[in-house]
Length: 277
Length: 277
Image 1 (tube, rainbow over the protein chains, first blue to last red):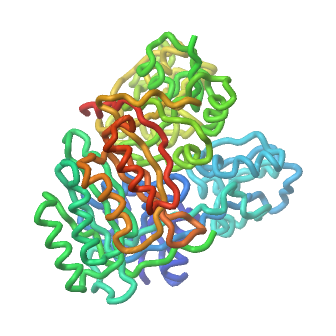
Image 2 (cartoon, rainbow over the protein chains, first blue to last red):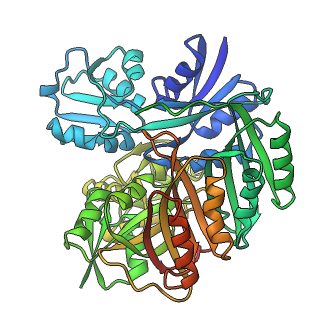
Image 3 (tube, chains in turn blue, green):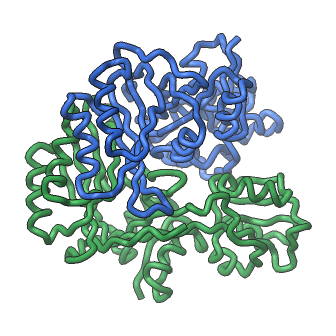
């Protein structure tokens, strides 16, 4: 059985993403940190890992971009998970009796308006969403509820009191699938993720993008980051639609390498469309 | 006295940024959420507001980009704050007696290695860093410490047990200063922040960046985001070095507007350099 490493504990959104992506015929391996996920794959403790890379409300997870750079794993897939927060209570709990809601601060913040409308003002942060449900299951207080995924409720045999608690339905997280070895680049609907550095000169990025634009290669994402401690140098993350198996893409990357001091292909994998909100 | 709205409570990193930026001759107004900061400035309850927009480890705060779009405030300044986490205890506390450390999950994560080296394994999340210090001050347990800013220790008359707890010194947050009215665009060392949309066609971004590159206008930041629920449309945030008072910049923006369905100038303000780590 394929072992997939994820950060968090059973019931975490990363685990839901793994199950939606791979199907239920996998074994999921909870890891304490994102770094542990990378290490688990590197050391062969897990076959593959899954990490969140950007959330539509919160933004990019720079830490995971840094880990992609400092480790040598390959991106072999992506998945967009719609984040749907559930209000979860003990089997006997009722919404009208609730006095406190616990969850990760980010989840609590994403449900603030809904909780206010429900008349719940007493909220308390805990380490993660699935951990909140585990905590709930260890207590026997029906006036406390947790905010977490549907799966977290199932894992701990708790009751879903309400679904779709998030204030904004356009709440998605993009996950990347990591492996020790790259896959054969797909020929159709491929996405390629690269990272490169440029010396900061007016028009440097323009010239870098020219290598794609002049070959009609479509960009899916671009993000720049100043390299702290190295003034004037910038790191760029670019996702483009196209396969490294394609000659045109290959030439574009060769061309980029002529003036990008560092260029690394993080992976070429089947692209997964952004779902409707 | 100038009133500056910030998210969090007294002692928050946003408040430190406000004091470093404005000097101590201001009154700081704690707000529950980022949205409340925008509203406080809009309704004249505060003269200006300060919000974090990106952290060197965690990435961009998309929520604040969204709020910049949904409100009509102007960016009038920026500031880079070096995030230096302190270990804070009761006046009589000693590191060797510590049994638990509390803080915001993000701060705890950023100090994980250091805490491990100190032999502290019992950590507990709370809502925010300054709130952890307030909690500490209400208890009288010298075996508990909090991780927060130097200022939070001062606000609550607590003792700094150790400084520079963060695992990575390259930990900076960029803050934006917001006002109801734009300032007169500076003539030197100006930075301009814009947001625009593009219809997703191969080379669309390349053409958009051409309006800057062909005029030798230097980009400082670029970030793209798919517009959820509107497939094929992308939102771009661009910061460039240059003043809207400059004719060349003015023509570049007119040129961009020819094919960007939406273009908004979020502000033109004096640029603040990224400090050394």
